[in-house]
Structure formats: C-alpha cells, structure tokens
Image (cartoon, rainbow, N blue to C red):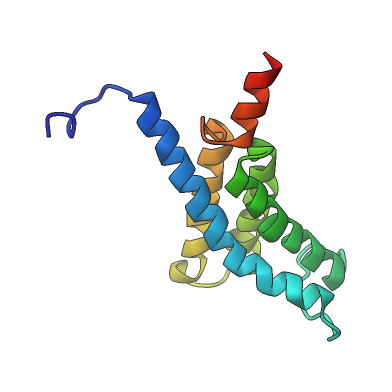
Length: 139
C-alpha cells in the first residue's frame, strides 16, 4: 500500500502500462477498422466521407490503413511510433474536420484516441514490444 502514492518511477510498471495501452487502444481501434476493411473489399459502391477531395475510395483505403493495419502494428509493437502517426492524423481528421460542427460528445472518442496515440508516439512501444526486442538484438 505504501507504493500507491509514491512518485518514484518503476520502469517495469511503465512498460506494463504501455503494453496495456497499446493492446487496448489498438484492439478497440480494430473494431472501427475491420468494418471499413470489409466495406473496402466488398462489392458494394463505396460511400465514405471525402474531406480532402481525394476520392471516397482512396479516403476509405487510407482510413483502413490507419485503423486496421496500423492498429495491428501498435498491438504487436512493430514500428510503434510510425504506426501511431496515421492513426493520429485519422483521429484529428475525424474530430476537427468530419465532426467539426457536431457537439463535443460526438468528437469525444476521436479526441481520446488522438491523445492515446500521441502518448504512444512520444513513449514508443515499451519493453514488451517487437521494436524493443529487435533493437535490443541489434546492439
């Protein structure tokens, strides 16, 4: 109980926290990316927001890349910092462009994901990631 209010850093706890953050955020983001992946490769006509004028198909493919592929990379901790960038861009776009006129509650989830992926960009994957193990072998 005495460790509950300490300000000392415990690196093993931080690494465990980063693992939980990566698994949780990546896994939950997959629930958004998987339906988009199925829509992208389904036979139906693509109807998707196109805020940058790239075309609905390209915009959907970029969202699938971020929300599906990059989420998997975050989960396994491979290229973690780089994988966080497309997710941050996607969440920024969702919050401030797609839902710009919506009330706060509508953009709240995108903002939460944006914060989480920003933390992952800053911290990296931690000790329980493929990044760590591969970089450790290189040294």
